[in-house]
Image 1 (cartoon, rainbow, N blue to C red):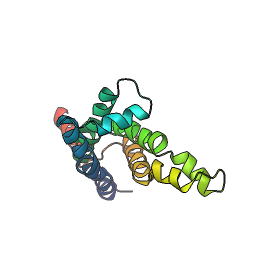
Image 2 (spheres, rainbow, N blue to C red; image 1 turned 30 degrees about the vertical axis):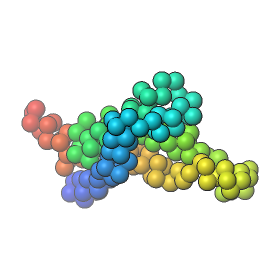
Image 3 (spheres, rainbow, N blue to C red; image 1 turned 90 degrees about the vertical axis):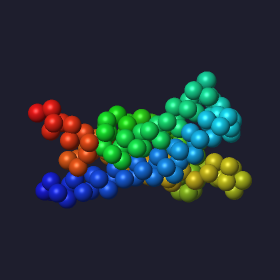
Image 4 (cartoon, helix red, strand yellow; image 1 turned 120 degrees about the horizontal axis):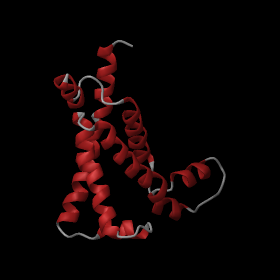
Length: 152
């Protein structure tokens, strides 16, 4: 693949970071900053020690990490932190594996249980996109690439 289409594809993948940041992280950070305890309580129910610390870490991984990914700055690290957060969201909070097994006819959680687990689809998509970016890097149309060129 020539560099132009590859860079465009990586840019398009990185734009998912904007949605992660603005669609998910910003609201969590604003809620945490205003003193809302809903997200912290949700993190505590997942069994994390120091739930306030982990809630802030997750919210910042989404907001700051999403923006860094979108702009292509410290992309691999931001994508790894974001992917770790999305892994927890998909597989711990939304129980993606249990839902997939149930859909395949292995196990049968009640409709009420499935509803309580929520949908893992968005977290799984973000996880896959962020893992791809962590592996591939941001591409030539990124701040990382611009800084690399400047140092040469």
